[in-house]
Image (cartoon, rainbow, N blue to C red; front, side):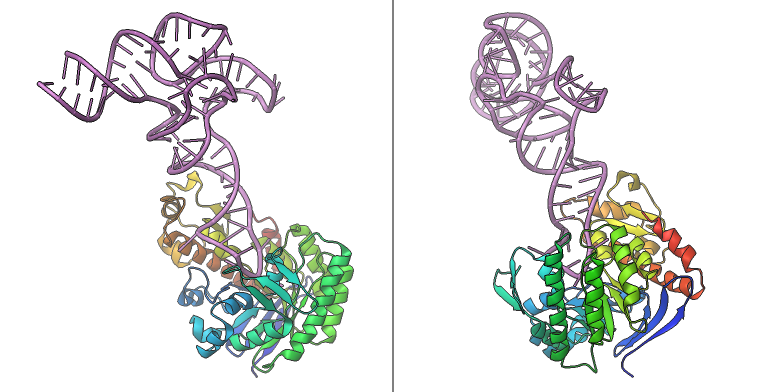
Length: 372
RNA sequence: GGGUCGAUGCCCGAGUGGCUAAAGGGAACGGGCUGUAAACCCGUUGGCGUGAGCCUACGUUGGUUCGAAUCCAACUCGGCCCA
């Protein structure tokens, strides 16, 4: 049994689920937060620390790895796990998000997207079949359909166009998929905050019977309330026995609220990016380390955290690492704060799982609704 | 002792009659970051006022002028050169 997903606990009071996802490279407890390692590395963090903080799965990105070093290179160097020194489960994004995030320098055709490489300006073509085959070569346990993520707000016509494309591409990805026994391919529900679009997209994808479903196209500018409202509408319509993944989300508040709608998986660059920028998440709220009030603070980032950073370094020291040269912090600072943030996100998920198991999720979620 | 150059906001430094509360940089302070083109980007930084605006500021004192950081004189301090 290479793959399996089981719900270990649920409650009648809410839709949060405590689950377990089994993959060829290991077991993942859900709800789960997946650190992002776009180019085959989580910026600043070595794999042993990723294990230490309890992360069970990390992300990679098709677009970036396709540009450099190329899917063949990764494949010949043993696949993404061997290549990146991470032996646990992995998930690769399809590059679909780059269609959106690199908007303005790309052309979207019926069945392909042309990018201008951000590295050297060369024209890069990506299509559903290529994106799938690249992900087959990279070898992650979970791979994603190549979708189109539209920037919000947008017209209904534009959204419909993207959903039509996403649906057609989803089927193409499924047909092109070369390793269905080793890699689970997830479909992605698009539709922005438009419920009609969301429902239609979900219904059509469900007909294709993917082993897991993602909700894409959120956290792209809409409010927290709109995002959660959309999840609250669409997540319960996804097959309950399959994993649900809310892509690109999010903040602690976003994630706990989304778990309440039935989401099982998250990924976000926020803990690492913000960590590099001197912004720490803690159980007591967030901290901007550059702020003067931490200058003489000898305490850890988070009294309740047991991560390497919190065990060994004070806020005052971390602040110093960011401010000893404002233009170019001591690299240890970004590394230590990224590590802490990831550890905090793992702690948050572990505690949330426990809260679900112990039937005190509602109370737990209320606490995080007020975060920040 | 003689000559010469200089003294600008927290620091460095531009400006050499009005468009100057004064370029630019540093430093300090603050904000942003949600499937990573991001160890990045953006603000604020004389005082008071929400604001129009008012006040105080370009070493000191005095002068020229409608008007001076900018021109003149003396002085104070500093750099360099000559004795």
